[in-house]
Every structure is written in structure tokens, then in C-alpha cells.
Image (cartoon, rainbow, N blue to C red; front, side, top):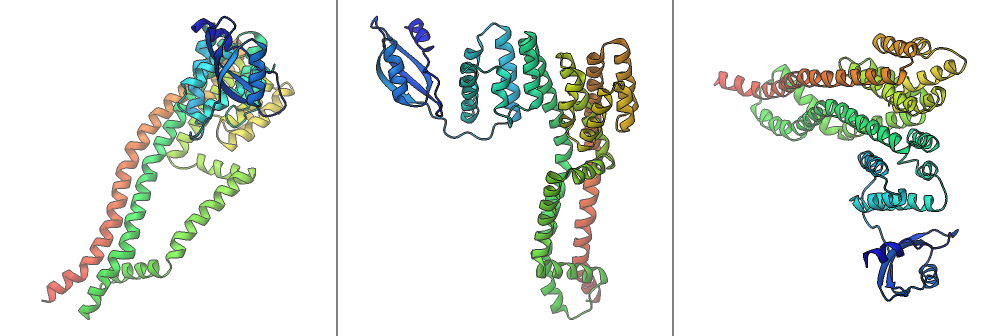
Length: 414
């Protein structure tokens, strides 16, 4: 039965211009054996007719649905790439590999996407072209590498490189997020605590102080005045940061010049700027090494490298590098002219060009700066923690002292 089911599951409906769905069917073949499988077709009628032409008596046809499921995460794409690389290297047919990957994922939306890609391949498209129809999940770099692997006949090796690249990139992004999460969390918590004190606690103290009928210390008067301003203009306190954040995000998304300025300023921030710069260099060199090792020409590789750096400063610099390299300038010279790459990266790139091992040297540069990011994140975490503690202590301590000074003064008088 398993053999018959496997054989029957390969029955496919004729291509149609309408949107195709996945249909799960079961029935009995000419030999009287129960068979089952799935078919991609526009309607149930098309499935039924196709099976009857194969001599299969249909018992049941059900449309496969993919309800629920969240957005497709980059980690899921990375895991799928590793799975596809492993199965391709093991000799598993491409269509079967997509079936296995679609069934193994826990995200119904991603499962549907994989089956759509599989359907495009069945329709005669190459793997790279099928991926290109889903640019939100499979970017230009991903598709270019797959296309290079298909053309050179080394798809398994390219998928393996691509999986390694995505795994390292995700790990690096995780380190950057962890470096920024702690201070951001502390600032948010501190803001909430101060807001609650200003809006609820201090006004209660103010009523008590008014009953004293005595002059308040200057520090208490200042804190009470700030609290009154918070209470009277709460819409400004809440609205201005939200509006400013939205406007800044909109300008960053819509205007390359603004994005370039913001990213350049972020690279010059104390401590954090160094981490962001090293991370950008690591991503840039890792991407170029992966593309170049896959056999993609250097000028074409640079088309996908700029965006992978995650910083507009490096993206703009990459465009200049690509222009200079296309006119015959050496890669190291073109990189040096931009003024954004550290000397260590330039020196190792020059050695790679001179020895003909550019991809290997770029990978070593990426490894070096990824380790530097690890060390910088650890140092940043150890530095931020005492600073945040002191900051919170000063802010909360000042408010507490200001509230208790009148009580101390009253006690001294009594």
C-alpha cells in the first residue's frame, strides 16, 4: 500500500491559469489497492478528472488548508535552508525535499509558502526563479546564490554555504539586540516608575504638605512643580515621544539622506557605536565572502552586499566601491577611498587580493569582527549595568529626598 500510495502521489493536474490549491485525495486504483496522495490544481473537478484518467476511483477529495500561523521569521528561513542543503546533499529529490520541509515546519503560513514554491518548480521554473516570487522571505542575495549554484551544478554546496551564512548573520543580530535590550529595558522601567511617582505619588504628598502651612524646601518645590506640569500636560508627555519616534521612523524609512545621517550618527555613539560598526563590517565581509566563494563575479556580488550590512553608510559606500571596481580599481583601493572600513579589514582584504584567496581572507575578517562584537557586547553589558544603577539611584533618590525634606523639617520644629 505504501508503494502504491507513493506512486499515486506523483499524479499531477494539468497547469492552469487559475490560482492552484493543494488537494488531498484517497481512492482505489485498477488493482483494487487503496491509494492516497495530494495534487496541486485549481478546483476539485480538475483533480477528480485527472485521477479518473489514471484509472483511480476517487473516494475522498479534501482541500488542504493552512489556517493560523504567524509571520515567517528569518530563523525559519535559516532552518529551511539548512534542511534543504542536507537533503540535497543526501540525494533527496528537490520536490520531495520541499514536501518534507513543508510538513516539518510548525508555521502553517511558511508551509503554504514552501508548497507554492514547489508548485512553481513543478510548473517548469528554476529554483532561483521560484524563490524570487517571494522577495519578502528570499532576498536578492539568497536568490542570486541559488541561481549561481544551479548554473554551476553545485546547488548542495551553495545551499550549505548559504545556511551557514544565515546562521552566523542571525547569531550576530541576536548579539546586537542583546546589547541594546538591557539598557532599553532599564530606561523603559525607569520612565514608567518616574511617571507613576509624578502623576500619583507626589500629588498625594502635595496635599499633605499644603496642610502644614509652612514654606517648603526649594528641592521639594521644584519636584512638585515638575509633577504639576506632568499632571496638567500629560498629553504632551505621552504624545511628543510617540510622535517624534514615528516621524523619525518614517523619515528613516522614506528618505535615504535621513537614514544615512541617522546611521552615521549611530556609528559615532560612545561604546555602542563601536559595536554597531564592528557588526556592520562583519556582515559586509561575510556576505561578500559567501557571494565570491559561490562563483558570483565581484561586481555582481557587490550589488547584494550593501543592504546586508544593515547600515546605510555601508550601503552607500558599497555603491561607490562597485562603481570603482567596475572601472578596474582594486577592491582594497575602492574600500579605502570610502573611509568607512577599519585598517585591519583593509589590510587583510589586500592580502586576499594579492594571494588570490579573497573569499578566505574575507571570511577570516568576518570571524575576527564577530569575535570582537562578542567581546564588545560583554564589555558593554558590564559597563551599562552600574551606570543604570547609579542613574536610577540618583533620580529616585532625589525624588524621595525631596518628598521627605518637609517631614524632617516639621520634625525638627516640633
